[in-house]
Figure 1: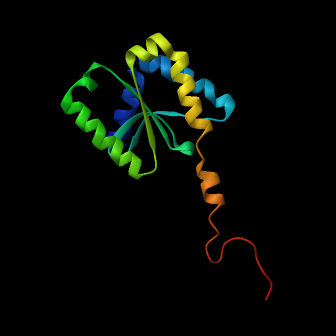
Figure 2 (figure 1 turned 180 degrees about the horizontal axis):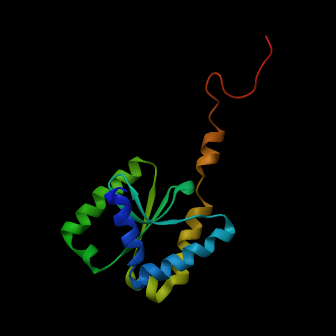
Length: 136
């Protein structure tokens, strides 16, 4: 088993209280068709929560993210994700603790306003040899 997978599994077991609260709320969105994964390895990073179908990343930021060096790292990371077609929403621990309903409203607005990978592909014509057959 790869080290990244083991690390992701360990991180899933040790969620902070705000991450655990966010995870319980994001899991509830499955009833609406939104599937999130937690601590998912992607391009050398571990994404707190990600909905791959909607290319949406949710990050729960603790106090360390106020540090300039960490903020610079976060900007680079967000740029990498943006180039891959992802949008990143960042919420600090206090927002999740004090206003989780507002946080969830923001997340749902993004999800409902975003195309899915399936709908993006639907506008692209099939490659030669794919799609409907025609008789010669």
